[in-house]
Length: 265
Image (cartoon, rainbow, N blue to C red):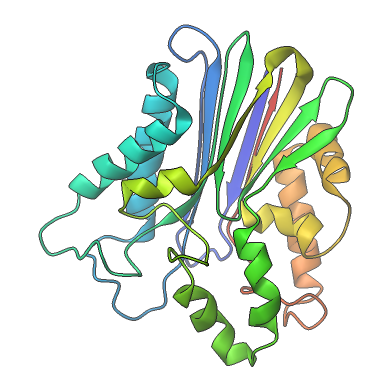
């Protein structure tokens, strides 16, 4: 089995708000992986004493432990429990109902000899490469469905528009402090013999395909398997630097935190 991962902050002056971890073997068999992409809040009040890196470290650690050691729990149950556990670590001065309370997107996968289970919440992605070489993206499409309306607005209004739709009906969902959001996640399972490789990607990496259009998901997986996660992130940085102002390829940040995990069975 081959496992490689890389993570790079969007700016060397700002802490990386992504999280990645892999457990192998998990509970004596199989394995598990977790990738989180912390949601960067505006500089104004978030209602919380803790920052996003604190949150993703807590949530990610709980998710890896639960998905790896509690095989009796579904991945949705693992996510709900991890969110609840992380919420309990906040202090009395933290307003967990605040719309900007620390939060993150989630990719979670777990495998054994019989199946590969997966969970995706918000705009990070999981790629599943089949035994025949086909690549299937596991995506939560809700945020992508809202972006065209955001892009029709003046640039200064786009972020506030999308923020107003986070964790509300008719919008999109992230892992914050409400365990019930686990019920919104995209989940599924594939027989283990049909899977050759997995790739978990934060949206700082998926922009290679969905923003810069440098290749489809199959091409992205091919680069990842041939060159490794660090090289793929380097390709994204090259594309970002060629369009720093976002004129040709509109996006929220010129450079974003970028994380990629590759698992080859």
